[in-house]
Image (cartoon, rainbow, N blue to C red; front, side):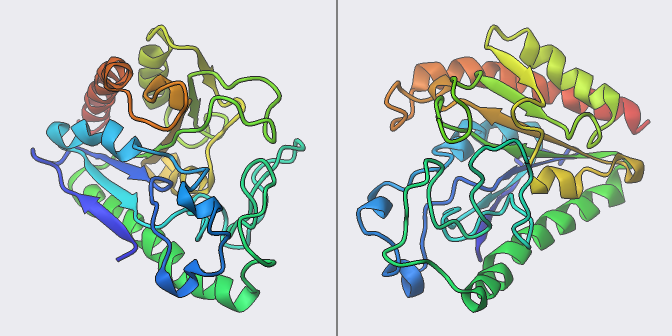
Length: 267
């Protein structure tokens, strides 16, 4: 499979966590197409985010996480590679040919449309189908459910933003992808964490949040973008246990509040 499922250790609560950019694998069949120097340490990876959130299984939350690198296919883009923002920032494609700083990742021009279609069929739709299946199963038990998409980013990416990113950025598509009580539960915890915090700027939520966030159907969605220095060392290459434990405390508190909020909504 192109993804991995981490089962909850307790009775499942109405939340599904998705980690679409933690994958590091590149299929052997296409590996030779890439610049070998670039794939020694694949940039634009949400390094260790699945590890950072591994406590969620203790709360009864299931996790789905990608196995393959976003340089194979970016699960948080539209299938037709339509840009999600129009403010001049660098936006990599569904099957990127450069990193976020516009450096080529292929030895030649990259995959043609036939190969892109193959990747969509093999890696993209299976992830979306699994998320949809998991949310459907949750709604058999609970009326209101939450899809939570977990991400991280380098603190400074000049191709997107000239200044450093804040520590935490909660996206809910300008408050359209989730009920206001759910948004409030997350923002109150994150906003009081002591970390710098933005809401819907400069990230509103990617295609996963925009696809599955349908509060009119009682499916809510949030995306949390996090600067890598929040839980990694200053080089953004190694997991920092002390930093990680500090943010994990607030993430756990946030999920506990989200569970309580959903329980009220599901009465």
